[in-house]
Image 1 (cartoon, rainbow, N blue to C red):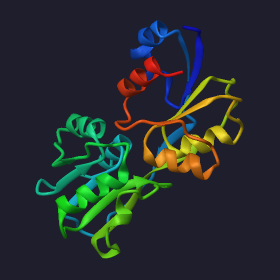
Image 2 (image 1 turned 60 degrees about the vertical axis):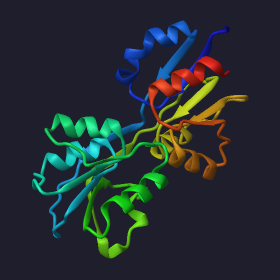
Image 3 (image 1 turned 90 degrees about the vertical axis):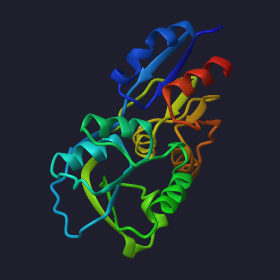
Image 4 (image 1 turned 30 degrees about the horizontal axis):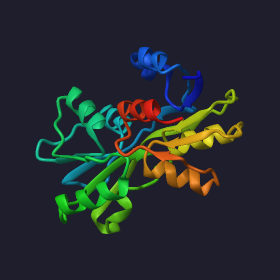
Amino acid sequence: MLNRTIFISKNKQEIEPFQDIFDHLNTTVIAHSFLQFEPIPFQLKDSYEALFFGSPRAVDFFLSQETIPEVTIIGCIGEITAEVLHKHNLEADFIGKTSSNASLIAEEFKNFIGNKKILFPQSSISNRSISSVFKASQIAEVSVYKTVIHSMKIPACDVYVFTSPSNVDGFLAENKISVNGKIIAWGKTTEKHLTEKDVKVNEVLSTSSMGELIELLSILY
C-alpha cells in the first residue's frame, strides 16, 4: 500500500492513541483543529425542566457556572458527551445513538421529552441543529462558550477529514482541497456545510468516531 497523507481537523492529542494504527495503514496524519474555545459569562432568566447538551464543551462550560437541579432531565448528542457528563457525576436520561445525524436525534429527543421546557447550552455560533425542531415557546437557549476560528496553511493531502462546520471554515479561509483529494465529513451537519461551500463530499461517517474513520480508511483510497 502506498503511503498517503490525511488531514483531520482534530487536535494532535486526540489522534495520538491511534498513531500505531495509522502507521500500520501507511498513513501520515496531519492533525490540527482551527478552533479555540472561551467561556462566556451567562445568567439564566427562565426555569427549565430539561437540558440538552450538543457537545462535551457545552457540558464543561455550563457546569463551570451552574449546578443542575436533581429533578432535571438531561439529554445529550451522543456517547462521548454522555461520558463527560459522567465525569461530572451526572447521568444522561437520553443519549443520541447516531451523533452524525443531528436531525434524527432531534426528532427522537422531541418524542422523548414531550412538552417539557428545555434549555440548550451551546456555542456562540451554534447551528441549532437540535433546538430548531422545537417551538420557540418550549425552548431557551444560552451561549456558554465562544468558538474562535484561527486559520493556518495546511500541506496538500490525499484525504481530508472535517469534523465540524467551523473547522471547514477555518480550513477554507487559507487553503484549497488538493487535486484528487478525497473528502470525509464527520456527520451530516458537516456534510451539509461542505456542500454549501461547493466542496464535494466522498464519504460521510455515520457514527462520527475514530473507529469508524480507521475502518473506512482501511478499505478505501
